Length: 304
Image (cartoon, rainbow, N blue to C red):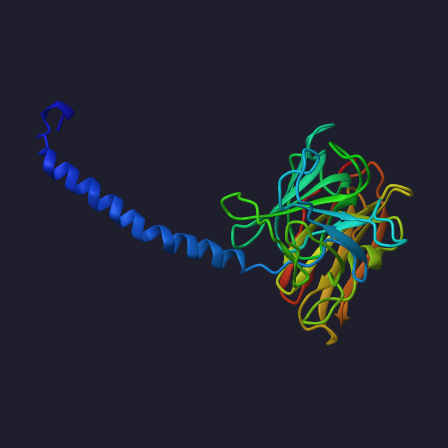
């Protein structure tokens, strides 16, 4: 019926409904908070660096030059310099790539994880995807390299762990170690080291020196990767298993420059299929792979 013809509710009934609603919301609030806290514990984070690398995790007490409070600056450890180090996802999720230019984070990435929580990686020298892009990542997938872009005075990795609501976790836990405000801890990475079902190889190691990941796709039981070597113009595809490791099973990797024949490596492998390398400078490529019956085939893309 028209709004003007609706009967008015008595004021006493209105107040009763408002009061009951407020009470109901109040009873739900602690449950919601508990659910959010439980979710924050659902994702386990490894160090954002290569297996075996040790760097200092500094959770500064806060100053005008270090915000927000609770973020970690990963810096040199001993004689190990961090500049140019590959930066890897600390947990699986969807990565979103940004470029803030000469201010704030500079080149940075946010990964949104399965429980709704987020991690941020800032001041990157390079990113594996252009700003405005996104990609699905596994724990250990490379997303960029350490640099000093944006509001940074020296090469380091700015790292944050945030709740699903965007709030800062001021005592983030990495590699099972909590780094609270005011603490500095040297943490050794086990990201991609194997054990507990982890593949001891990385796509970069499989393809070799000079290759960097520019795309990847999830498979049931693993992931297939597309890499590029800017030095020689070659692409490379490798498919890495994450299950049934150290046990031979069907896997494949393929690469097809547009207008040319496809090159495929397929067989029964313990850890990975590939590398498949082709000269594709200035050409679009179709790429992909398989693990068991799970397959991925791209369209023709990455045409630069």
